[in-house]
Length: 244
Image 1 (tube, rainbow, N blue to C red):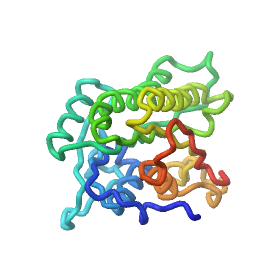
Image 2 (cartoon, helix red, strand yellow):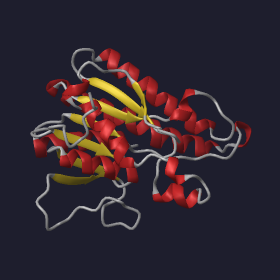
Image 3 (cartoon, rainbow, N blue to C red):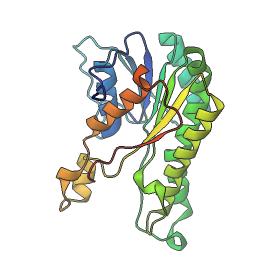
């Protein structure tokens, strides 16, 4: 039986909070959840009208999309965000922790503390705070969380240790939330390798781009993990790296 895509998933009447919504994967997830009928609360520090944003809402179209600008590393900001979303839309059914970044190139002894702290803050702290403050609302709706880990988090490696460490933390956060909320909130994560984004193509112009995974393909898997079709799946780390 074929795995349902977001086109087969019915999220009508549900509310999804998607962090990192202005990036390639985040904007892809926004598109998929809107197609599936969800009300999407897109969250980022980069607004849709800023140059670096890939989120392009059509102001002339009727859409169940609302944008919220928030610093996800600030607990007060995150707490206010979740309260505002519930005040605006009445509930939270899905949380997608997509916000994140990559840094690499130095061995541990040459890595600046500021770079390590940046990766911890952006990759792990954001997911922790968003999960913490969304969970009381997700427990009411028996909702779901999907976070973004990484294939490289499965083992150590030279040059991008802090990134791998934070993405391994996402897997452990996922397993912890799943265990603490058995029977109520499902928590899973996906593990991409190289995603086919404009930034990655610019950074690696000579790579085999055909082997990379399109953000929309990953968004399909995320949508499935939030759907009733994955009702028995929680605490999983799902590979989404294709041939990359």
